[in-house]
Amino acid sequence: MLTSEDKKLIQAVWEKVSGCQEDVGAETLSRMFATYPQTKTYFPHFDLHQGSDQIRGHGKKVVSALGTAAKSLDNLSQALSELSNLHAYNLRVDPVNFKLLAQCFQVVLAVHLGKDYTPEMHAAVDKFMSAVAAVLAEKYR
Amino acid sequence: MVNWSAEEKQLITSIWGKVSVEECGAEALARLLIVYPWTQRFFDNFGNLSSPTAIVGNPKVRAHGKKVLTSFGEAIKNLDNLKGTYSKLSELHCDRLHVDPENFRLLGDILVIVLAAHFGKDFSPACQATWQKLVGVVAHALAHKYH
Image 1 (cartoon, each protein chain N blue to C red):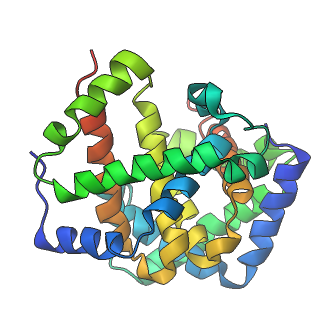
Image 2 (tube, rainbow over the protein chains, first blue to last red):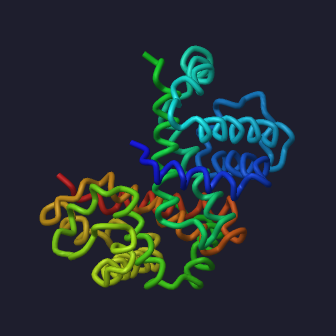
């Protein structure tokens, strides 16, 4: 359950990375493919070399969607409804992978923010990513 | 038996050589207790865990974090025999402490994030991949004696 303090922290994190969202997205995906090679199965049509245009483009998409979610913390289900449909009926990404993406996203935030990535921020982002994952998997069955 | 390439061993030892076991251990354990508060139940006798600030400053948390990460150092010295190295600790965590092995994975993931915060860009994707593999096999070795 996201407290009002969590919401402030999530928005603060977003502000801190607002200038390099595309980089954050691309890096998150690259790390996910390197660390959890099984995730590549969902991207047979992609050039998965680090820095590829497709990874950059898709990373930007993912972070943009997370940004939308971060602005709609009081109504995640509605804000992510389209994406929820997409993941349930088209992509059918095993929900286990949401945790793997979340871990890599946290690592990228830690790399970029260093000491500024406080335990409180870490906890808030972890809760946020869990909430997003739950919404994305909502319509699976 | 886990296979470690020369590159993986290098990525492990080069990071480990620069880690302050006391600082990183304390931080990782504190974050575990803050991010996953249910883990606090294993540390009833640690005193004040009432807030993130209290947890971070708690001397027992710091000391225990150091202990946990020191043990990790043993794993790094014995990459080819993790199960043997962790045999007694595995029995301890199962028979006496009753810690669900899922918590080892949670702590491992947190340790990776702590290292990322410390090393910044030096914690490359290859580094992360190697360290995620390491924390995974350590968690597995710790769970090995569970029954």
